[in-house]
Image (cartoon, rainbow, N blue to C red; front, side):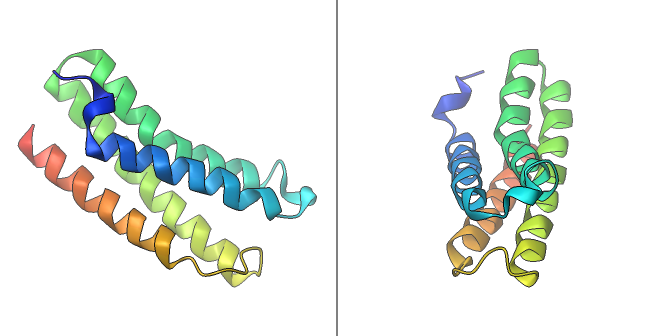
Length: 114
């Protein structure tokens, strides 16, 4: 298997994690151990599951970790929407929404090819 860093999928997932970390910097400090932590953990779980799956060196294990990444992506998407609804995110999230959609498609297509 090739290095995970060469995957567009991993690169996009890594970009999303960085975006989420920057986005949550403006959340209220009272959410440090709540929503901030949960959102960051779910977003970071997407690229880290890809990395861990690659580290297992079997297609079955990689597929299992891609499943987990898909679940984390769904969680991240919900938490972004929730944060927007309660007013923690004031700016437009269309770029993040688009990236989430793109990563979802990439995960699905990648898993189908395993």
